[in-house]
Length: 154
Image 1 (cartoon, rainbow, N blue to C red):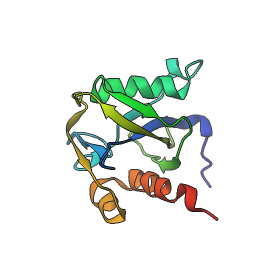
Image 2 (image 1 turned 45 degrees about the vertical axis):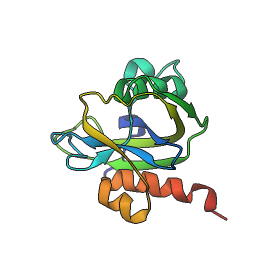
Image 3 (image 1 turned 90 degrees about the vertical axis):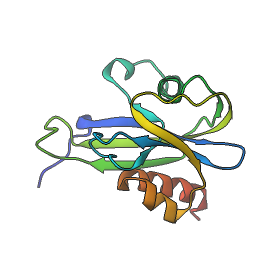
Image 4 (image 1 turned 180 degrees about the horizontal axis):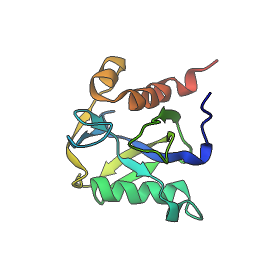
């Protein structure tokens, strides 16, 4: 049995940005993206080594949103709303076992969306389970499905 080492997991923060029409911002992944090519992504990114000590998640989310979608105004929910894990044991990434995704949600208030060169485009969409599977890679599907189920556990 091959045991996974938790220290070999990256942590990635993702943000569901929701507008006044209850639509979600999704970003078209570049065709050379290792996991999301041909699919859509959510704003966010990995916590790097320099950021692992001292910076809180909210600071990192603000940085990621600014980098990926521009200088917009938004109101961030303080606590995470979903979690997902993606195993990626492979020869291509020998030093990593996978990624832990932590999802936050934010209300888009205003400002022009200016995406970075990390993505090809963006759109605002309504999301349901059918749309989730159509737009996202399985790990983001699970992350968003978990979000829609988060407060419904009895």
